[in-house]
Length: 137
Image (cartoon, rainbow, N blue to C red; front, side, top):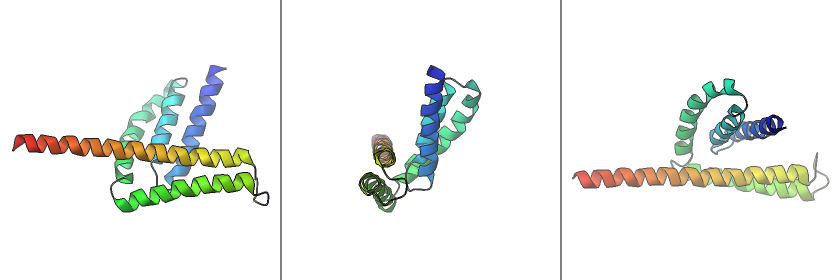
């Protein structure tokens, strides 16, 4: 039962991460989370973790590297939240209902959490680099 649950959760994380790859957000972080989850039950996947981790950290930094990228990510998150509400409320949309709407809303929330994490990580690293330069001079 645990193996099946891990497989489902890990696969969902990877799939949502892949979907977020086409949006201006840190989708690779979600792919990494999915791989880490899957690797707990499927050890053969461990070899993919480090290359994805390296790319995910670079993508996380890139996603918050400029105000334009941050704005694009925020707009994508708001679009996901809005689409989720629309799919939950509007019966004329294809495959409408709260199951689809909730998954879109959850994707938007995940995007915002990962975007905030990326921004904080980059900001803390830049501040620590700045302190190191100041203490040397």
